[in-house]
Length: 536
Image 1: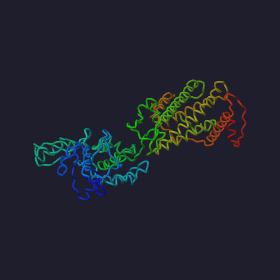
Image 2: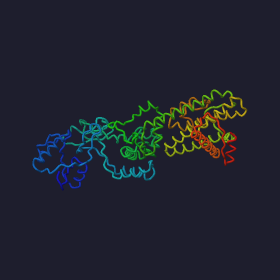
Image 3: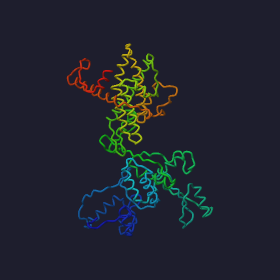
Image 4: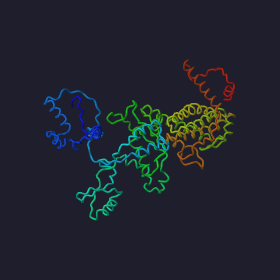
């Protein structure tokens, strides 16, 4: 109100509160807890406003200013107005008695834990945000006026007039014991009606859930501190910082060694999901329509630490198609094995290992696919150890769909047909079946953390020996030390794929039907590759 004069309302504005503290101004509460103007305003010379709803009062004040000729003009003034998430009402800051926790020491220890490397944050750019928040070291209001929550463990004396005393205890019985020893047997207590801040209670979770304060319990010794916390970046300060502060203060240990932060899931336009916008994608609906694995895969494919993820119908449809592809490839390999294993000299079962000498004795095409598979194991393992989840999902899909399903499965059909036709060279069919089973199982193991259901379903249908685990989930991860590579064969495979693709493109450009057989002549500058093609 007015030009050149600053209106100060210390009891109802956070900034004004700090100004008033610096300048020793009085704090006058003018809004009551029911949202009406407090009767005490009569002491400030404005009794006509007492009891009015605050919104009505604001309009009346302006009308009175206009009536007195003190109002010059009305101008729009954009500003942030906090609204209640539940009711939509304007939130009015007010003075009230609350419980606060001093954070200077706790916050400093939490900062030191990250700066010393005792705790690592991924992505590391959030370490700067971590420090920026904690270095303010503001008192933490830990009490809330809600119906649900952990009750404040404070008990007030109610039957000693003039005595303002309270006891802090783990239980009412413990508080009563303290009170009686100090004030006599007839003392009466009443617990504080407020509850603890949700983040205070949540901050206890890492150690309270495993037996604390009994630090000798088996669960506490085994599971605390945890190796990693995975959560959203939007609650880094609200929850994660509280857990670290509480853990260091109450157990003298950090609650976890690593903090991995994921982003928010947004709609296909990049907008934050909300009920008011009507753009919420219910994960349960998506699971029912596309499958749980498809939803997991769609989210993980675009998941980068600390970055928001957009989810769309197209992403879910593609993920569902990939799940179907896994099932179909697995069914073909297993069915082929069941139909033709009796006519081949080799017995097959999941979990089998291929020795380096055995691989060297195989045709180059098999060596190429096995080598690419081993390279995939190296890449996926390294990515998971670094908490990179998006690249492996794409790499596994490319290998299964492009290399195995589109190329090697088709090549294996030719080998099998030769076997069924009595061709003496058809012993390659047995090798092909073995390699197909090997490629399938390794791929299922790599994909299982991302798509556990379809991979488990396919794996359960594979032939297994007596020593095989009961579940893919507990089967051993592929051993990196036994992963032989043949980069030359991989190079030939890449050239073969490029050659066939160029032939297919030429046929399409010339309008030649796929069923028409034509003579083909091409120039090969690589004698080794030429020999490899001749061997096929």
